[in-house]
Length: 364
Image (tube, rainbow, N blue to C red; front, side, top):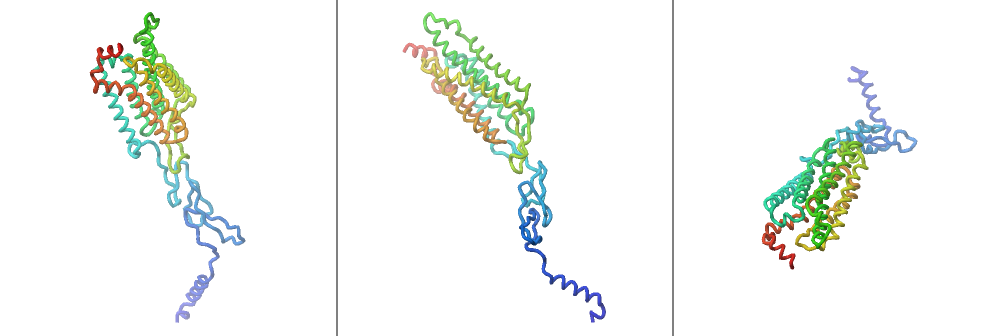
């Protein structure tokens, strides 16, 4: 009855059945989004294989012939069907545990430095503080404290002003610190030579020579940094290609010559201080801290020599972390090697911090 009442329906139903029974002209399953078709090289054009889109590419249709590359500031999602914004990478206070660790270490080291400065101010009239020019000791403590604090410029998202300040300031602060160490070493040499009868070195005894050494050697580093800032200062840059799926926000040194001139001059001062302190390390211990200076400069030079290859072999936030570690380790080395022995005498052995004890030791 259906055929008689609706002839057209009969023909349509028959046509659909024939279509469904015809085999599909396909050698494989369709390529899903996130992949593309690649010819197998056979004579049948309907035969192909599916390959996942390459890194940085997406496809969002079935049986896509090509994959599309994402913009530089975007990256494929896990299925490679759409582009999503890249994440920013830097030493973030909120997201990075290294930043929090550095924050705690800097705060602790700064507090210790302030404690030692307070201790030296309270006991400023005692022999252990007066030895080897107490003014230079205070300059050294201040420069070490500022070196610790300048680490905060390396933390957080870098901008142009922090990129300029962090490289310049730690270079200047360390130069002042190493210049102070050099001045203390020169003071040791002059004091020993002037103690001999009829010595011509007696006219050089005093604070004037040590203050001049700190001023002149530090001024040279300031001049290097000013020229560096004038020619090609550091600036913020975005590295879009180093880390997949991330935009690395970092500081470009600007002039590579300026950056390594600053480091080289600092290393030169440290080397001179180390050699000079090593030569006078065997002088009488009553007024000699050269052996502590020798060890502090050995630590300082070792840290920065090891830092350079590590710095050059890393990128992004890990390169910054290497630089921060070098600043903290070298500053702590100066603080510990030079001032901890004196603090030990002031707090634990106060009987050795007297003029009578020192004079008796010299006679012996």
